[in-house]
Length: 166
Image (cartoon, rainbow, N blue to C red; front, side, top):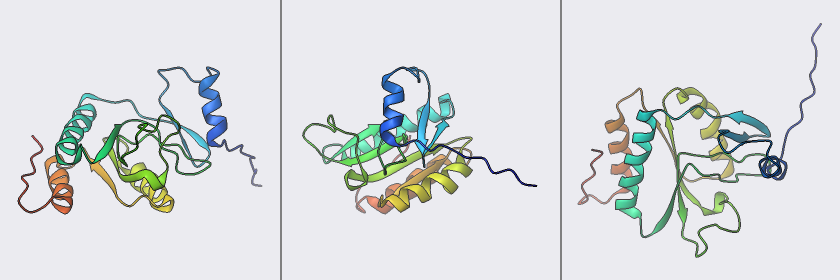
């Protein structure tokens, strides 16, 4: 005999309200993925260094033409508010002070994965694609980081631009 459990899925408004009233502390690393509150993995030194390195590269290449956000929320739909490692956004005068960016604002999402490669590829990449995000990059830390960044960089940078990751 199988047991059917009823789940309650939260929407972005409910999730935001939980943060406002203190259900989540400042130190809680959680995001809303398809209505479920998901604990994010801790950020190790390799992960942080990769995010910083990628941020520096993207700022050098496109910093004046876009807004580059690091580990801040984006709203994909009524039930998903993930926090990608890096998001390239269309410029906006208020820097999205009135509301988190939505798919129409997003040019690129970068997820840096150390222990989350499989879930990033099987859950987040399809989620971003369904939302209409034009480009998603998963940097697989256990793999060759330089190779991943150079390949991504070559796809988006003019031939005469040098792309370095170190």
